[in-house]
Length: 286
Ligand SMILES: Nc1ncnc2c1ncn2[C@@H]1O[C@H](COP(=O)(O)OP(=O)(O)O)[C@@H](O)[C@H]1O
Ligand SMILES: [Mg+2]
Image 1 (cartoon, rainbow, N blue to C red):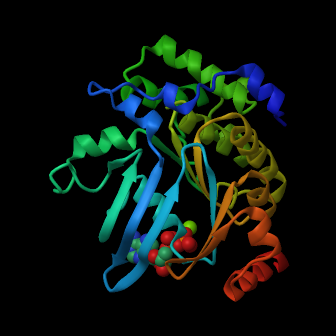
Image 2 (image 1 turned 60 degrees about the vertical axis):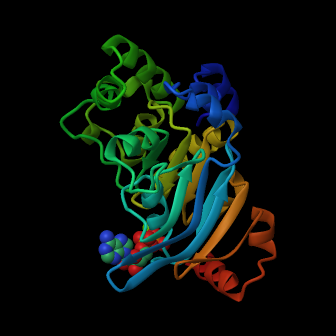
Image 3 (image 1 turned 45 degrees about the horizontal axis):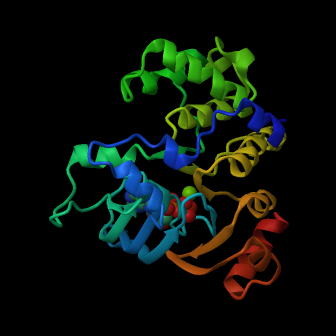
């Protein structure tokens, strides 16, 4: 699998701030000074009467690698979907590099175009790879760069090859998704997210749909990314060994609240909460 050396040799990772598109108002410059890449401030989310997140406060530094763990149904996916503006919070505010993705400067709900501009700073990879089955790997990769970013086909193909090299699949450029293993498809899905040069990458249980022997190759790609890239990573995973290796911080969720957080060392060897201990026992025993 890819070593850190191969990552640096391929070298397309520009520091996140330098890769940020420069806005007309110079906000890419502002982002270099932003203290937080993403902030959740007193965020609640309900579906009908069901309170899924309760007064969530979570601040993530630029470049920080943060993993959310906790029982199924505790609200982890909802946190990522809110960051990606796939859901709207019921209360509170969420900011990406200091800019609210909920309210505009006048405190009104943000407009669609403002939201789309800020959202472009985030990328997400899901449990299901969601590649377009009728498109080749190359076509899947260049679709968003040529449409959303309006890059030329030539430019988009050039970066597609760079990112295929990063995930170790240059030789699959003309394959269709159905001709790839699940692990390979997920590596393509990671390349497809990276090609848009997100400053924040959200990974939601990206190995849960894979057989264990295929999960490793996907996790190795993320390990390389965590070492070599300045991207902020917000990860949800049940792979505790992986979480321990890549994370600067582990955040433990239960029933829509953070019950504790800290370094991997602390959470995995000396957790404070009985609920954390119970969760870790349940996951390590199964
Ligand atoms: N669109 C939705 N409509 C209704 N309930 C939802 C929706 N999305 C999530 N939920 C509920 O919110 C809770 C938290 O879900 P989720 O964020 O997916 O948890 P996790 O990722 O930690 O397993 C669950 O009880 C789930 O059923
Ligand atoms: Mg989930």
